[in-house]
Image (cartoon, rainbow, N blue to C red; front, side):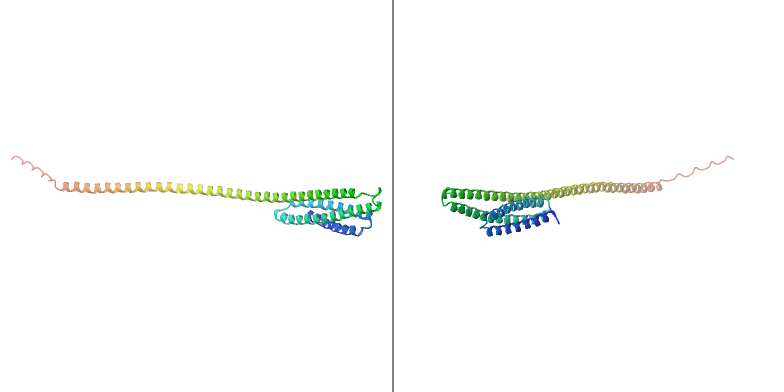
Length: 244
């Protein structure tokens, strides 16, 4: 069982105890001592339940995003249920206090031993203002908690967006590297093609030059052979006649 599950189980046990004690307070209307003791226990249990919700909220923040979102919804439901129990507690307490004030005033018959109607009214007004202030503070705390949850959600979303931007930047850099490599490859291919073109032209020029030289010697050698055939060869001189 996880830490959150332990908090969850303890919270449900405490809320069940709060509901039970509030029922007992209603049944103890004729017994002020038991009534006051039950109200004190309920107040203490409500405080413990609020602390458990705070602990659950802290525990949820350390979990994975998917689990965190689900459990945050559960914690908000627990906050709403605790607020409802607190409202029930405040109504029962207010009713009990009012009954106690009315009972104390009736016992004195309006004399010195009892509370005057004006005094009771002032006390009821003060109690109402205190309870209103308490509810206002509770609502403010709930608003702060909800705002904190929203801020956490926004922070998580910004984190995810930052990761996406980093990944996109990495892909852009990778694409740029591939483009540079392709550009270099195309440049090398163009240089190779240029060299091959120059080599081809040189070979063609050399072959043409060789053909020209061959033709020149071919025609020049034929002319020399023809002129040699036409030159007359001189006749040998006659031998001298011997004297008688």
